[in-house]
Amino acid sequence: MKKFICLFFVVLLACIFIVPVSNCNADTITTSEDSDNKIYDLQQNEFKYYKITHKGALGIPISGSFPESEVGDIRKYTVEPKYFESISNNKVEITISQVNITGSTDNFDTILKDNKYIKDIKLEQLENNTVKVNIETFGKTNIKVSPVKRRYSSLGDNKYKFTTFIDVTFEEKIKDNSKIIIIDPGHGGSELGTTANFTYEKQLNLDISKRIKENLEKAGYRTYITRNDDTNVGLLDRTDCANLLNADLFFCIHNNSLPLDVTMQCVHMFRGTTVLYNSTAPKPGREFATILMREVSSTIKTNTYPLQDRPNLAVLSSAWCPAVLLETTVETDDGDAKMMMHRINSQKVSDASLRAVNKYFNE
Image (cartoon, rainbow, N blue to C red):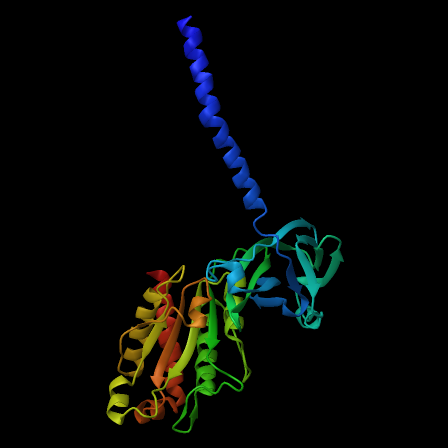
């Protein structure tokens, strides 16, 4: 009889405590599944494609524009594409739900021109807000599909654009473990940068960057440069290549300036070399920044002033790999400007940068 009473109380307690917990978990799962029913855009004209030695990356953009009140913390909100991929021989089929095709296919011809990995791209709008992306390849590559988040961008009036790329990478069946480095010449096109002492910063940045790219490639690194000529490049476009190619380092080249109302004494005090980094990044670049500043300043004999932590700078907050911005010299200083007019010093900066990269990866 005592055993029966004990058993009765055990069952009763189970009904009181265990059953409600189970129901609560079920409600939580349902809520989680239904939490994001937004319909996003698949913007054809914003496809991205980048290539380096032995590798190519195609970014399929899934994006939406929403007010801050609708998404909460804009830094944490993420577009999470719901997709399924099927890879067979030289065919890649990606079926994406909760999206509609927008824009034109203007850039597909550019992507496909001289492309050694992708033969054709076709999009098909299906029912129920579903899109099928068909990619025909030339075969003989290892293909991987994964989501890559892009930093949000402001559209004004507390409205923001959020994008996540479905990143399709093509790697040749050659074992290549060489590091991938993105070189970003600051400014370009209508963005002149500093204009002082008969020098355009955008031109000096490009000259130094091309020399760094050449040096790194000779040393066996795989590189991508964000601009090869005098063109405008969007702030987030500068880091898309780093994120889609899964780069090991993002390296931005600039030359500094000081306000016109600053006294020449202050200009002389702050002339020289510094490096900017982002301490809040998933992979902060402070370590490389420290090595780089030491190598550059000791090579071209410039003053240095402390590293600058700049987490709000777009190119440093939107790259998911270690990212730094080198302020090589201060162009508003007569001494720094005259020195950088001699292209031999651009080569010295390039040589110092190569030593810094080698030390960073070897140490």
